[in-house]
Length: 202
Length: 202
DNA sequence: GTCTATAGCACGATAGAC
DNA sequence: GTCTATCGTGCTATAGAC
Image 1 (spheres, rainbow over the protein chains, first blue to last red):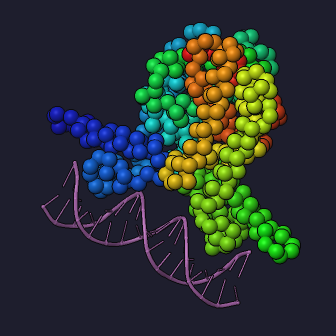
Image 2: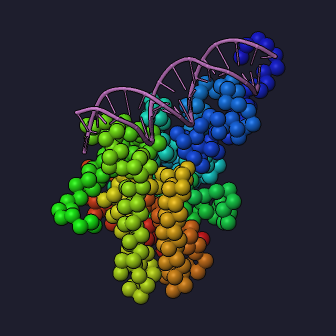
Image 3: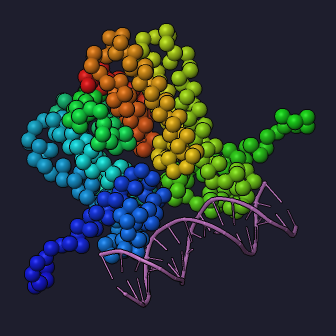
């Protein structure tokens, strides 16, 4: 950004590596139960070195969680998820599938995101954005009801919670070494949710 | 238990009240992020008073979580869940419905149980028992495949994880003041999961 | 960019009076 | 059965040398 040449953004890469190590530990032991000493040990540095790359523990949390949330929010603006591109139910299926994919590719970040309790301003803001995502998904299901793709008295928010609950539960048990291929797991989950959706009434 | 008369178990009631207040806070702020000072404040006593009723913070966790786990394990021995009482798929549906009911009636305990990370011996033991429950459910689905109630190449563990993930996600959003009646929420979830099950292949 | 050392604080737990 | 007071520990974060 300044007039200096050679903007190699070297510090940026290290901030990334610190966050990756931190979220690996957050995934296994929880955010609150993970100390910066443990993060530092995983990187073979001391705790103080971390503060060169991040402003503090909560800044690391924000770094990773914002990436996961950004990916999810991006799904809503990807063209297959947009009105007029397909039927509402087909758009919902796209959002669901992308949500599953993001859960797999950003496993730790999404898992930590889903377990935040709202204890700080940052956490409350994250939860707000997550709720907005769920509401956007419910809006699509509402269109599906209006278009006659779902039974008349379906409750879009309730069905969204069940679909997203199923999708989000992926991060609780899926790991990269899962016996079945990732694509098969995702397609099974999508088929499971979509047939559950079509059969539900309330 | 001793020879004294009048076994009023008064301390037992208080231990229950302490645990109830504690799990309410655990549900909202997380187990690690909740201090015994907060629990004491909710009860209008001081932190030291809690130690008369429980051996410590982890003893309170064990008290509530063991009750939730005991209820879930009990489902597996209730007669409608037993082999020979119905078809495997009907037995699985019973386990699923009871799991949802227990999630509602023991909301905080189940929510906390599901979020444990395995940081202590107690937590690891709890996770072990939870995994045994999931395996028992998967065994029923395995019978369902053998009986031809599910497609031949279905993966029982994968389908169990999706069914239970859906059921367990209930505690993330359901609250006693939900607009829809509890029975309707449960039946919607059961129908959602069962039709998802029957349509899934992998 | 990483280190040692430590400040500052919050927490779980205990002792002992009442 | 609950209190006040305190101990010991582990944590986030910072200061300053290298």
